[in-house]
Structure formats: C-alpha cells, structure tokens
Image 1 (cartoon, rainbow over the protein chains, first blue to last red):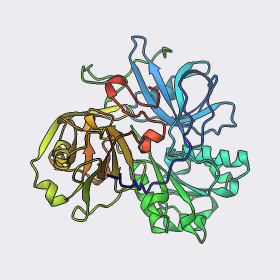
Image 2: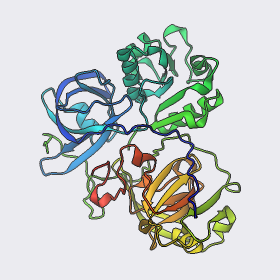
Image 3: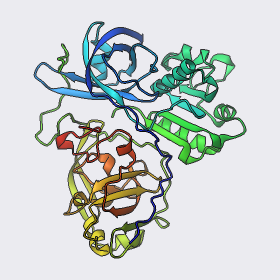
Image 4: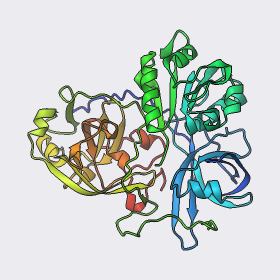
Length: 248
Length: 201
C-alpha cells in the first residue's frame, strides 16, 4: 500500500540550524539596566555562529553537584564577538535570580547553544517581529542581523510593553524605527497609551500582508493576542511563528 | 562542569521520580507552542490512522468517545526542564486504534500530524502497550485549548513535545521521518530519563 502524502501546513524549516555542545563561557560584561533584568555579554570559546532568534541554555551547578538549566534567547547577532543575553529576573526564578543578582565579570558559566531551528530568521525574506516585554530580545538579534548584513528593508518590528522602562533595548528599538506600543504611558512619537493594536501593525505590512513571516514573542497571553491581531490584519496563520516566554 | 559559587538552587524536596536536569514546576503549567493556537470544533475534527496498516480508519469525535476510556496518573516532563507531578489524564488508548487498523508487519515508526501541520515522530513500540493515549480530559476537566484541547496525543514517558497538540493523524511508516522539532535541533526519541533533549544527546 502506498503511504499517503504527508502535507504539513507549517513552512518547511529549511536547512538544519546549527547547534553547539556545552562550553564554558566567561562573563565579559554585566549591565543592570533595569531592576528586574540583567544584560550579560559572554565570551564563548570556539562558538558556533547562531542565527537570529536562537537561544542558549545556561546551566548552573551548586557545590554539591545539583544543577539547574534554563534557556535564554540571544540579543546579539553572529557578527558580535560576544554572545549577549538579556535575562529577566522572574519571581522565584531559580536561575534568573542568580544571573541577575550574583553573576560578575570574570565568572564562568556552562552554556550550550545555539539551539532551536524554528524561531529563526535568515535575513533572506521579509519578516515582521512582534515582541512583548522581554519577548523583544530575539527580535533585537534579528534587527542587529538585518543591520549587520545590510537588509534593514526586510525587517520590521513592533514592540509592546507597559512603559518605557519595562521595554528592553528601548533606545535601540526607537532608533531603528520600531513601532513602540506602551500601554500605560504615552510613547515616543506621540503615540497615545494603549495596547498593541491592528492600527500599529497594519502599516508595517503595507499592501501585501500575506508576503511576510511574522515572529511573535512574549508571554503566553501576549503571544495569543498578538497572533490574533496578525490574523486579523491578513497574515496567514501558517506564516506566524510563535515563541512563548516566561517560566519554562 | 563549572561550579557557580553562591548558587544553592531552590530545589524542592528531592524526589526519585524527577528525571535528570528537570525541576518540579509545582502547580504551574507553562504553555509552549510554536504556532498560532487553533480553534477546533470537535464535531468537525477527525482522527485518522493510516500508512502501513491493513485498514486505514478515520474516527469522529463521537466515535472515539464511544470507545472505552482509560487514564494515566503521574507526571509529565517538558524538554525546557519543567516536570509537573500528580496529573490525571484520560482519553482513549492508542492501542485500541492500532488494534482496529491492524499494523502491517514492517510498520516500525509513526509520524503524528496536528491540524496546524505540526508533526512529531515516534517509534511504533513507544505508542503500544498502554503507554500512549489520545487525551481529552486532564485533572477532571476538558483539556484546555492552549494545552492542545480538545484533544492531543499523550505519551507521558517521553518529553512532552512528542505529545502532539491538536493531533489529527497517525501515519505508520517503515522508516523514521523526523517531525517538526526533530528537524529543528531536538532529539529523535526524547527519553527524559536519558536526558535526550537535543540532537546528538
């Protein structure tokens, strides 16, 4: 008997994304731009170049051998000599609180990556990033990749947060021309406070909303509402890639 | 292995049923999905088992619910390192569907497909012997939409991406066809006790 054709409607992932094994990274820079977040820049020896949107796993080991691992998206692009993580400090976050409160320059961390081959953008087709809060982090990597490879015209970005101070990389996003939707304060450029709406996103897509791959990243609630918003302005469901952030 | 000084961890009481590298998420149940959550009408949804079988068969929601319901009590394990304990799941055993279609002798692998196009692959033996269900009830309630409701494949002895949400089809094959995450850097089998998270583990 013939096997029926398999007809997935999700786009084919294309070439396998690179992935690397465990390496010992050295913390090169630590910045705490927000009380609830830390920006770590890591020197990762012999690292495999990543694609924008990929993540690393950070593994902490206690003196008695107990380990805890969590995944963090990269904000840096492959041309950056360092690997940059933005870690939001979660309430009761076993790993994030250590990274946010304890880690110092010169510390060593076990990391593994890059990982993930789905929520990635190769910079070869039009892409729209829609991020909520710390969900903008992998989209920042896409933005930097677009800039580094001269394809800024292929990448557009909308970011949502409660306020300016809650939005990672707010200055960089504003300077790149991203649409910034702040729900609790009026935004730069005179946008009145309010949640991300179709009126924010539709102009980014122009006349052909079906030609884009959308990358949605944020909390489960944000991902759900942003996905619905994209479908509402004409983006086909099969062109929406979703990464849900938060405790995982 | 690099010891992180000052890191004690926030482990709960150690438990022997926690696979390596996992933590107990307690009452939380994170949602992880790569695609837009679909709205499925159970009365329009169907479940098919095809490929290397004697009698390819498609069931309706009502037909499946007329089969004897069985369940599972225990944990689930997500590759992102959380495990959730003390869960109660029920639905129909995949054994019943396989018995109905009659797997051909050379069938050795299965590709599960969801209504969204999501796919995941499993060796056939991992769907047999009371290890796998089509599940629609969790902790006494209908399975929520964001967790794969109204119905998902449920294979709790493997990492949970194998338990395809919104499953609609199982295709029996004589060779292994990598599914969605398996093409995207994740392990082909995904056994939590062997910590098979990523390709090559």
